[in-house]
Length: 425
Image 1 (cartoon, rainbow, N blue to C red):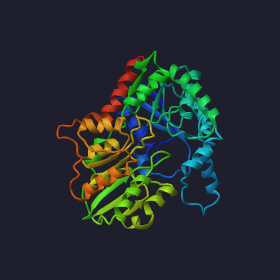
Image 2 (cartoon, rainbow, N blue to C red):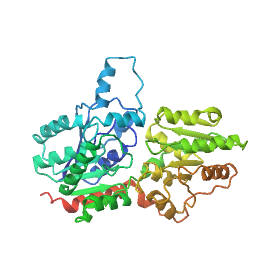
Image 3 (spheres, rainbow, N blue to C red):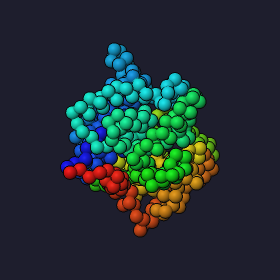
Image 4 (tube, rainbow, N blue to C red):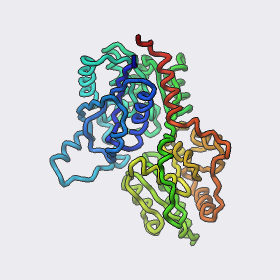
């Protein structure tokens, strides 16, 4: 008999973006390996990116939605009454921190009790063997622990981002940090299993919370989906050297140093007319200003975030891919595109933390060139190498990238769950 999972994911299709794809694929592979999976997610939101095609890809047996009273949900209700407001709002990082300061745990706490009520209704008609929550938002972890305690089932916490160990410092309220640290410690100690996106994050979680039970924490990299690359379009349609970035920027990760490097090259009369820089994503005003100031407009193009399948094609048809990780970020920060970049076989310009896990992964695969995100002089040097066909940052021929498929990573997680869950008769 299939084991039945209540899968908690605030970010789930038709929402799109970096927080959506991991839960979507986890559900897919849980189903593929024999689990019955019901997803509990949020109702309609005023979110910056939506993709109905992702919803069609969902393999969940059922998707249940709970109302919320968080800023995104409230904004959706307001905008329904004002048809003139059609574009989604992308808040600056400073505004996000101010908004978050007014909420305990995080600004999704308004989803907690509606979602808990919905879960209790589901338990009246279903019997679940496990509650699985992917975070952030961190409210989801609190929800999973409350569901598990009430209905006496085990739960798993899956980290896409750190909670209290997060280097972004999302709000200005010190009481949130104290309360969250207490809850994170309590929730993790009572969990059946903890999964996370990298080895460095695992080390930090064990040291901070689970020194007595280190085997409880396992790594499940985001990875790449081989099926998507088999249908991707690799055709290049421009004679220029195409340098692309797919993703977002945040409080620490910024494009300003890269933009400064380009500006200096132009001021030095270095000819970059053969280069075309393209940025795909939902960017705040400061990012747009950095990339479109003065002479940069001639060389830099900014596009809205595109559907994931199109994103893979853009990755595969680029000449060089840009990777940004701030030196202020934790050592374990791994952007969602890293493994898709690797699978594409394209050259990568990694502007990343020089003692971080992302650099270790790239070095082990044979990528021998990188610099810190803030190192303007090295960025200029690498742009010149690209322009002069001297940049050769590619994986070695015998690099084993297959270990980073989503299927293999998810299977490791599922096997660990199987070992801990009692068999069903």
